[in-house]
Length: 170
Image: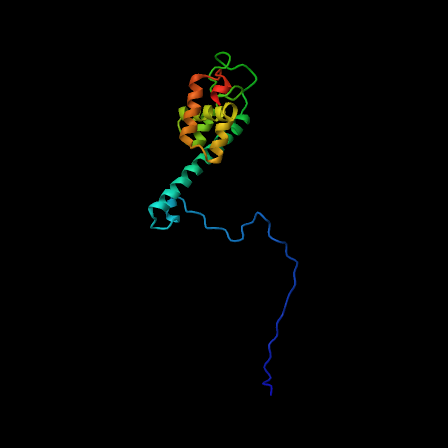
């Protein structure tokens, strides 16, 4: 016996491009501005979990410091010193690596939201890490060496001069 009720299904076929490998299928929600990062973590953490997270933060800060040094030098390479003589004599006002615009520290200070003196120090340390201390930069990028120690090494090399024997620096 049939009741006379039926169902029909309609199907439409359309060509669809596969998603790009760079597209996030299910993106995580972005943190709201001003929301503390601790809000993303479980409310209760054991001492071991807190210690583990602190260790991860140290490694992440080191890797970010290495990236910052490389980006500062990229910016320095994009800001060459003018070819014509500067007012006030040869190299007047020049700070930082040779061949770099004297205005780079000011631009870097604006980008980093820091003082000009801090920007000059950052520029000097970035140049030392990328040119004189590539091993230190590599350890920093790997997270093996923490940021304060890497900057202390760069500050010591800056204070003693670049004329120091590379074997001593290594």
